[in-house]
Length: 324
Length: 209
Image 1 (cartoon, rainbow over the protein chains, first blue to last red):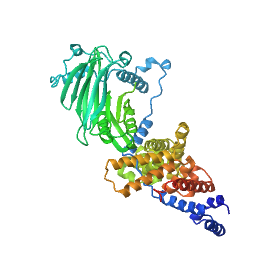
Image 2: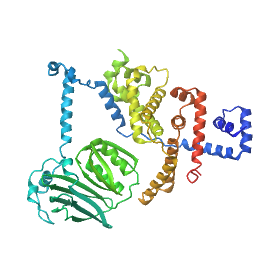
Image 3: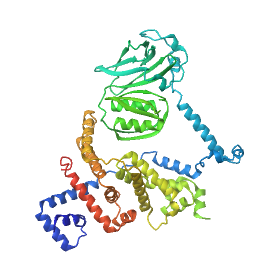
Image 4: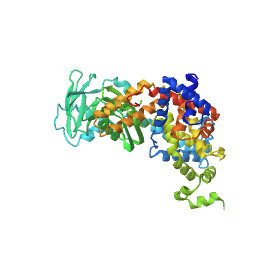
């Protein structure tokens, strides 16, 4: 008996379903062939450990998710509207509810999409947020122009010349926020570091730096930055962990009914990564399950469903922004 | 009064838990979604676990398992009842998985070396993070992860057969029915898959002494 034939018989031999004469032949071969004998030992071991693979259940909301799809399939999705084939007279009567619903849905989608193109938060809103108290540690006074309501921010016009926030670790336990701009106009900013407010402006040749102490172990420091250049601006949130860790760690967790902000705070804390984010962080993420994921995967899993994306900008630092 | 309308009147979920599989399926066929909900409740663990072992990834498993149930719901009329529902749903999960694979032909095959390296990193990280895990638990977990990676590295048909036999504990006859293959082919493929796993584990002496 050659080795190939012998190995073909391993399962039958192991399960005792081999006929006696073939079994004896195989036993002779195993006694003579050390390689096959070793492989058979390994073969038996492989079978034994496969039996010990644990059963993993689905996420808690799995069944509800299936049933939601079943119910929606049962109700029936409105037929696709062919605008050129619509009987418009009937569209506006209550006798064609499916079509009315379809038109309504299309209008709603258009409305929601138009909202997506508006800036999520503007400096004007942020200014209102901080207008209650004057800055405690003013670096310099705010440009009067920034009090005007800003126009929507358009990426084409800014050409990347807004306020650039970079993060550095100066020494253990201290983060260095460096604010600079490539714009020819002054970039006015307001920063809130755990209740301590800073405001001022930076110029192309006059950057600014703010030292932020790292939070206590196991907590997260959240820094809000609002800035404006002329008539446009942005509101950014920076999540800082107690200690930066490498991005290769994996974690398993699930979130349910949490806002983007809550999730970023959790990812910052659990993985030890800093996150600089802008966009609507108040959006709700219904449910997300993260299984043995790196921070890249965890961020993708949680943010992709709310129109945000994340990318690494340095080791242990991520930027989060709306998908455009 | 028919079985169906009696159940609909009774209406509470508690009643459905008492019902046999065939009755539930008959109710599903007549459009009773609560009966289907009960079917999902009974099979979700098995279906999900099978999808997880076959896809090798939690998120894909969620998608495949959910899609399989939706397909089952839509084609419940074609379920004749001469096979067990479990066999039928395993067949659907397998088809959903293979269809997905076809769609994503570019799906990267995970190299065993890469995964082992990655696993080592994650273990190192866990130790650095001083997670309170006894060494044995860590080693068992690690062993299971490597084993899953090894299973992931098998060709589709071997991975499916290994999972059905060793994880889902299906018989040769059932596997033959699920995969629409002769029993002899199932047996020879299972043998090949076991040999492949044995060979791959040989490169992991520190974990699989």
